[in-house]
Length: 288
Length: 268
Image 1 (tube, each protein chain N blue to C red):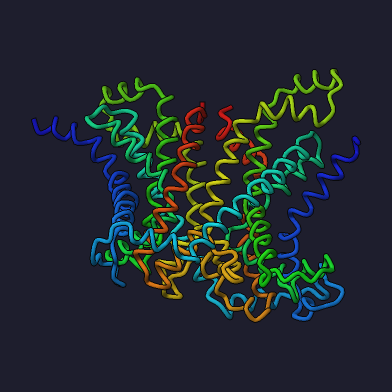
Image 2 (tube, chains in turn yellow, cyan; image 1 turned 30 degrees about the horizontal axis):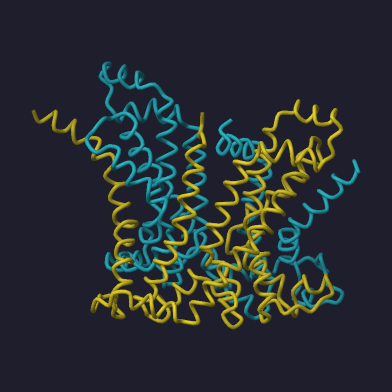
C-alpha cells in the first residue's frame, strides 16, 4: 500500500520545483501586480485601501506616462523595420559560398558574443559627443545624449547592435535551407537578385522572418536596460520607456501602486504580441 | 554586379565588427590617444597600463567571479529542474498532468521585466537580497527548456524505460545512465543558453544586489567609475577582458553554432 502511494506521488515530486517556482515568481507576482494596481500602496509595499480604477485614471492623465507610451511605440516603430532591414540584408549578402563569405558570416554574428552592458558601455563611449570616435570619424557634431532625436536614434542603433548577431544567425539558417536546385532554376529562368528574393527566398523563409519580427516587436516594447545604461530616459524624458518608467515609479519614487499600474499596461501590450508568437511557435517543430 | 556582393558584404560586415575592433584597440590606448586629432584607430604606443588599472582600481575580478558562480549554479539548478519536470511530463501519467504542464509553460506569457516590483518584494521578504540565491532565484524556472526537453524526450521510445524498469533499474539510474546521455546534444545546447542568459542578465541583479562585493559583472561594468571621468582606457580594457574568451569561442565554434541554430529554429 505504502509503495503504491510513493509511486503515485513520484511525478508530483518531480514537477514540484518547477510548479512552485512558477507560482512563486510568476503567478503570485502577476496577481499581486493586478491587485496592487487597484489599491493605494504604502512605501513598504502594504496595500492601504481599494481605489478601483483611480490609478489608471491618474496614470492616463499623467504626462510622463504619455511620454513613455509614445516613446515606446515610436521606438518600436523605428527599431523593428530598421533592424529587420539590416539583419536581412546581412543574411542575404553573406549567403554565398567561399572563404570570404564565411569570414563575413563570422563578423555578422560576432556582436552576439558581447554582453548587454558591455555593448551599451561601448556605444556610450564611442558616441560621446566630445571625445567619442563616431563624431570624429564622421566629422559631425551630433549631441547624441542631449538632442531628443539623436538620443532616440542612438537607442535604435544600440538596439540593432544587440540584436544583429542572433537575427543574422536565424535568418541565414533559414536562407541556407532554401534548396539549391531552386536557385538554379531561378538562374536559368533569368531571374535577377530581387526577383529571386521576392519569389523564391522570401516565401520560403517567411515563417522564420515572422518569428523574428514578432520577437523584435515584443523586445522593443519591453526595452529598459539599454535605456537605463545609455540615456537614463533623457533628455527631457525623450527616451523614457514604459518598463523604465515602471522601474522609476516602483524603485526610485516609491510609488508602488503606480508602478504596478504601468506593469499591468505592459502585460496587456505584450500579452497580445506573445499570444501571436505562441501561435507561430505552435507550427514550429523542435528537434525532429 | 557579381563583384558588388562580396565587396558590399565585406564593407558591411566590417562596419558591424568595428565597435569590437575599436574596443580591443582602445584598451591599449594612452590617455592622450583618445583626444588626438585626427582621431586614432590604433594606439600610438600600445600600453598595458589600462589593464593593470582596471584590475587594481576596481573590483572587476570579484564581479566576474560572482557572475561565473551564479551562472554556473543557476545553470545546474535550472537544468535539473527542467529535466526532472520534462521527465515526469513525458514518462508518467498522473491526474492533472495537462493542467500542470500548461500552468508551467504558460509562464512564458509573463514578461519577467514587468514582474520585478513584486519579485523584489518577495526576495526581500525571504532575506535573499545580496545573496547568490537571490540573484538566480527568478531565473531558476525555464519554461522553454522544460518544453523543448519534453519534445525531445517524446522522441525516445518509452519502451526503453519499461525495459529498464523490468530489469530492476530505478528512475534515477535510468535518467543518469540512459536518458541524459541520449539527450546530451539538446541538454548541452540548452545549458549553454542558460549560462549566457544568467551571465548576461542586467536588470534583476542590479535590483537584488546593493553591496559592492555581491555585484555581478554586467552591473559592475557600468559602475567602474572610469567612463564618467572620460577615462576610457581602463573601461575598454575591462570590456575587452570580458568579451575576449567569448569571442574566441565563437570564432572557433562558428560551424557548430550556425548548425545548432539551424536545427533549433528550423527543425531540420
